[in-house]
Image (cartoon, rainbow, N blue to C red; front, side):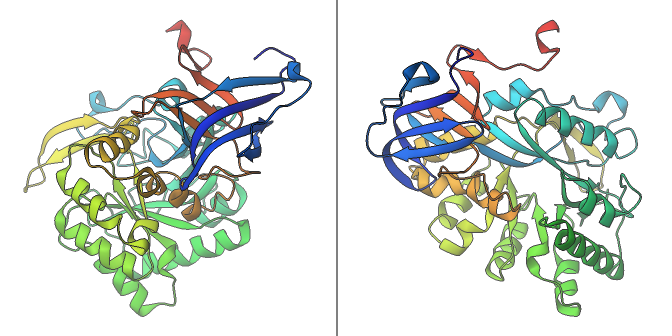
Length: 388
């Protein structure tokens, strides 16, 4: 775009909101979607509009990844296993337009101050980034010294993260978790935030036992909890289905090679309650350690942000799911759970977070808050990326 072009007109793309809208023209101005028209739009004077022909292209909402280690993670195999931080160009070329940053096992060499600064830097580059306070351990590390203050007073913080049913957790007591949940819930109410407890789920036999006990013993809504990695094994998936049918939300970690996950998504996409209360996230830039039954580390890898778009392609191209049944897991569902009311859907007045894809779902254009961040021949890079 030249300096005079203040609006972008996307012409003739096949739009999924995630529901199918048909062939539409989309007018973008500032950070917002100004118009979605079945009729061909002509904006005058033309010198103020950049028109992009999207004939035979697919337009979908930008992906919302609600679990990314934006400053890196890892460390389970010592200092050399600390993973690298996110680059904005990698997020963009993966189709991610909104991300929520987390800490993990290491909350000593990785700090919430550093994570907040990373989140702010991404937001200054037209991206949308948020975060959770806390980490695996309990009492939760914080920025202000108080979980309630973090959530209520720091705009970018949506809730708290903690680990359960994992040998790396702090094995918080029932009363500890009840107080934490109450604090997070009240902070969410006061700060107009979702006030979520984002729970890293390990593979221990206890599964969600302590959460079920919390819900039985205390007047707490099930929607305050958002357990992730719920496709770690078949038992957790079964537990997750029960959690969703009771009104809760769960998160699966995307893995296109996980046949159990693919089968679950195929089956759950047919059920309205199941498919609207499940999200998919990448665990990008976090370490992916493998432990044996004795708790010994036997392998380690790193998560990548492009795993979401890869999973969408496999569900669509190889498993024959329709886009309106696939996209909510990655777009509208996380937006609803995180109270991001202007994201996750292609609709008028929403943030213009959009992806333009070829018919076989190759990513061509990315728009973040109305800014062109990727074209077929160019991608936005962070301040120092081009110098490395």
